[in-house]
Amino acid sequence: MRFYMELHRQCRLVLFAQEQKNLSLPTLTIVVPCFNEEEVLVTTNKMLVQILEQLIMGQQISAQSVISYVDDGSQDKTWSIIEQLARESDHVSGIKLSKNVGHQKALLCGLLSSSGEAVISVDADLQDDLDVIPQMIKHFNEGAHVVYGVRADRSADSWFKRFSAEGYYRLLSYMGVDVIFNHADYRLLSRRAIEALSEYREVNLFLRGLVRDLGFQSAIVQYERAERFAGESKYPLLKMLALAWQGVTSFSTAPLRLITIIGGAVSFLSLLMTFWGLFITLFTNQALPGWASTVVPIYFLGGVQLLCVGIIGEYVAKIYIETKARPRFHIDAQVGGHMEKPHA
Ligand code: UDP
Ligand code: MG
Image 1 (cartoon, rainbow, N blue to C red):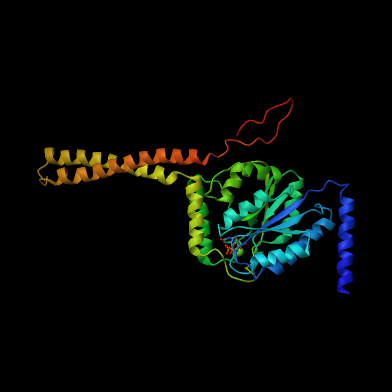
Image 2: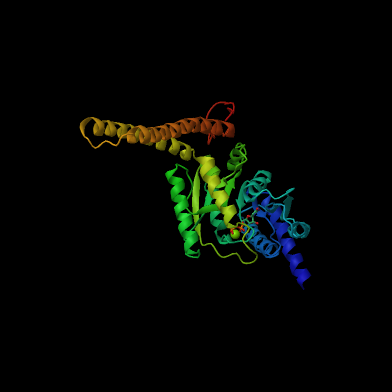
């Protein structure tokens, strides 16, 4: 009975594939980075294949759409499960990285190796609500090149997580880093957005900042984030802090500018202190012998040193930005005549 049901399902999919050859539906790739995810993969795959088939049947995406798992150097059975899943379904493909390179790099590998016209990235634990995928595709069809999945609220989080996340986003915006509040790595990118992303050559990745830097028409879909349904978080506090620091240092040189400002302020205050010391010595009889000549140089030299470090920092910041060699622009559209593609 199960065999016939499966046969029936496969036949319907083949028929759809034939019908769709005449329609120009976008091909979707769902990229899923996985690190030691043996406990969740089979269930995750079942749900992802289900949603993919629904979208294919609903004629929203083409029948060539796939789910692409990136095994980020797992030590458990993750890769053999992916191999098995790929054998069982034409909709499943996999990439195995040579070692654990971290979520951001694994995700970038999946994005850059994808072939779909639209690419959605999602975590293997399916904490992000798959039900908003049709909305993402709708926005894509309406012209959005980036569709951000944004958590509607953080009431499911602990007080600490909520407080630290909000503080962090605020800090980033003070430092001039452009990120979408409560958006992580659940998003849709168009082929053009991925091509633009491939022009960024940096190795210290903070994808949510880079994607924001792309520009292009974008949209937002809101969703509720669930708990991880099995297994443990692969993002312990230390990795989380490392990512947070990456976000600051990859997109902002404000900490170096801060040193210059503090150095300038201390130098200025020590000058005021010098005048005050002179005033006390010349116009009062309360001067303590040796106080001004000892204390003022300490502050003054401290300030000058900070200022010098800050100035060196400003140049280091410039070198850092230049070595990243980020593309300076992305062309969104062109009209009329023949134009060469300028080097970004
Ligand atoms: N992940 C990865 N490499 C790593 C750590 C995590 O590919 O070094 C993947 C992991 O398998 C999952 C996603 O990144 O698909 C997010 O990890 P997790 O759900 O554990 O993070 P959390 O939701 O707890 O922040
Ligand atoms: Mg998770």
